[in-house]
Image 1 (tube, chains in turn blue, purple):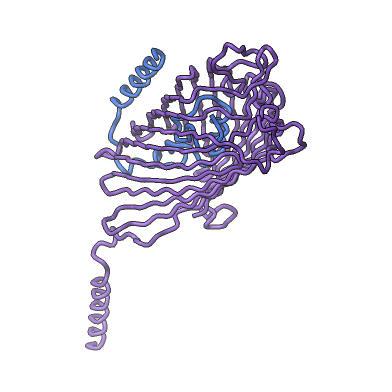
Image 2: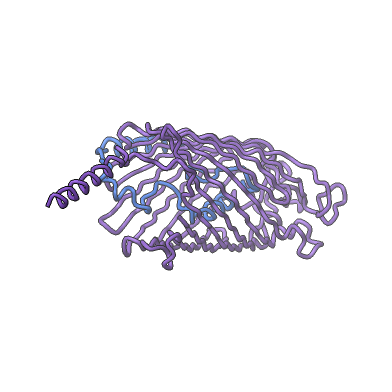
Length: 74
Length: 398
């Protein structure tokens, strides 16, 4: 539980620092952000990779994929 | 001359009349008919091998091959209030062959349990309004010989006023039902060939809440913070997983009937220069079965041209195993819970490979509707000896 709290604090601090340095980006300046490779999610081609990782490892979730249930996995 | 002037006047009048017929604000016109946005076909071939099969109590081959195919269709339309409705319809079929599953009943040769087919359709709907609010819902179904699942989800997302950030909340549930197919020597009714028996069943319920915050930091950098809380209850082991105690007696895996998982993730994407995109990911995971894991990955997409890119990737995972795990003949009769499933043990894993993506402007192979082709290969190893290879292909049509 202490480790979880520490991780939360570290992730929260990193996020806070990054958010503090945000600058407003206008729509016409978003050409790089709108690039297909910049998507903040999984590629569709990763679908089976995420599935076998959730079968073969005890950890899952926080990646947009299934995090338990729906199949005979753990 | 008069005729010429009249002709010029008539021409100008014609042009003015034509302009007068043009809609005043054609820029805001949106097609309100249901449109096909894209179709994705995803196929994968996965093969693994190792020496720690859970079916045989932590020893024996883990040889398994899985062939999966799915088709995803995305449709959209705008309603009268300019809200965009998107429907996703997916149909997936996986077929696997497993050497260890064949050992549930070792008296048979290539029994029904050596292979299975999973069939999983799903439908989801999302609606986004002009204020950047999205709501959605979905249902899913999954069927294989010994496992059935019904799933449902609800989604709410809200963009910030300046469209630089987005908050998202997704609630999901899976209501599963599994047949209790025990190893042949542990069946109390004497057992049969396993194909026509009426097996007892057990339930498994999963409830999850996923929260995410995505943020544009600058014109090259964006990140996403993710957190899931997952609660599972019911039969959480698998009935055909054997456990051999130190007195050589054999038992069925026994695990607690509830599990709480909390994974936290951070994604960060950075556009470096004009040709390189760095995609980083980190996840911390902890659950009340005492599994803790750290996962980090980095993908580097190198744009060979605006339409072609190559993406090498590497993923590292460090897992501290559950306290309920012990290997072959290591458990004792004093243990309340026990498993010899190496997926829940402590190990490090490495996953690396590369992908290639093609999006030529006139379509792949010159076929205009064939919008994108992506091919990806990965090699996966665990420090407990498991090795796997996977090849995946995504074909996108628009």
